[in-house]
Structures are given as structure tokens and as C-alpha cells.
Image 1 (spheres, one colour):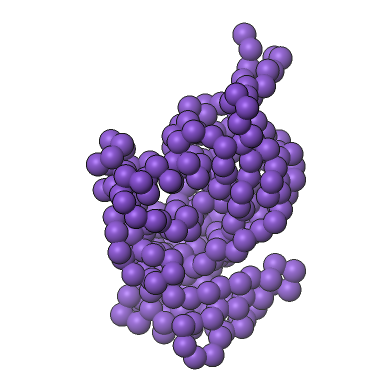
Image 2 (cartoon, one colour):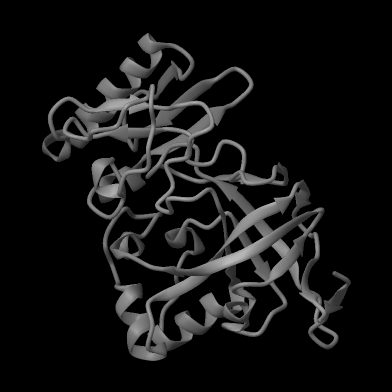
Length: 266
């Protein structure tokens, strides 16, 4: 089926930021570029999670579970105090707390993952349930979405929410993979069910992203200081910010790359 390219007047829609979140609930890592593969999330995104002691997650036979089975910002805002960095080549995770020594441990060995679990459990204190495990499984993503997707946020939509709430909102509250500029606020919702060229990759936009109380947590202060979900509902009549995309054709995506909407012609 032939394709035509849809443009937005003289607007240039481009990638401004790319982030991955190697450990579910922990800090973002900024990337200059990434290679996307068909049917996969950003490489290394939500690769690890701290499974609560009562979570029925089996690393040998992984299956998607709702986020309450894991340490996450919606319930454990103190996680925002931690700065995590994962070296995917050496398979080493470094976690720096607001005070005291950092943890450096291997994510590739059982002993290393046990050390990370023990450290995070002690940090969470009474918020830890049972004996938590630091878990991973090849090819598995601990995303809030049961399918493997890439999340995108239009910075104009975020600015529109900021204006409605009368305050600034750190974009990392919303933990997206790609933040882009050049599109009118909320126009990205019209992408659902359609395809976009994201740099050298092609994505099908599958759905809008409904937001949860995790967005209440300020990633700088680790405190709940506002309610973006209420702000969205009151100002716009919905709780959504951003869209999910499924990678159809892989390719390189870099900061500064163009985003182009593709439409199938009859």
C-alpha cells in the first residue's frame, strides 16, 4: 500500500530527549542515541526490578505483573532520592543514596543481584514486603504496559498542563522514553492507530498513556508536591499525557532526529 507523508505546515517535529530507566522505579539515564529493534522497548529500559517478597514473579518463566508487585514510585516515593547508573557493557549497577556510600554490584550474577536486593530492602525499610528479590529475565521488560512499547511525550502538551496547573513540572515525573517538540499541544493523540517515522525507526502508535499517582512525586525532592492526574482531569477531562508506540521497523534514533507522521492512502 503506498504511503504519503503528512507534515504540520512549516513545523519541524523533532526528538529533544531520549531516556531509559534500567531499574523500574529508579532514576532516568539520558541517551544521545539508541537503536530500536522491532517489537522491543528501548534497549535496557525497565530491564530490572525489585520484586516485593509476595510477588509471584518467576525469572525462569516471566510473565507480566501489575506494578504493585514491585518497588515503584507510586508507593515508594523515597526511591526518587536514589541516583542509579547501569553500565550495560560491564553489567554493573551503581546506586548512590543522598548520604553515605554508593553501592556497586554486578547485575549479571546471583550474588550481585542478591547484594542489590539487600541494599534496596534496607533503604525501603518498612515499605519492603517480605524478602524482596532484584529480578531480571532475558528479553523481559518490567514496564507498566503489558506489551513492549516505547513511550513518547509532546513537550507542548506538558507545557499546556503546566499552564493549567500554574506551576512547572519536571518532565521526568512522567518517565517517558522520548520527549519531542514542534507539535501543537495534544495533537499526538491523533496519532493513535497510525504510524510515525521516529528517526530511522517506524512505530505504530497504539494508545494514549493514562497517568497514575507516581507523577505526584517530584524527582528532584522525592516529595509528593502536586497532583498532575487531577490537573489533567480538571483542565482537559482526561488523565492522559503521552502515547505508546510499538516498533515495527528498527533503526537508529538520536536527539535532533525528525518525527514524521505516515498515512496509508486508500
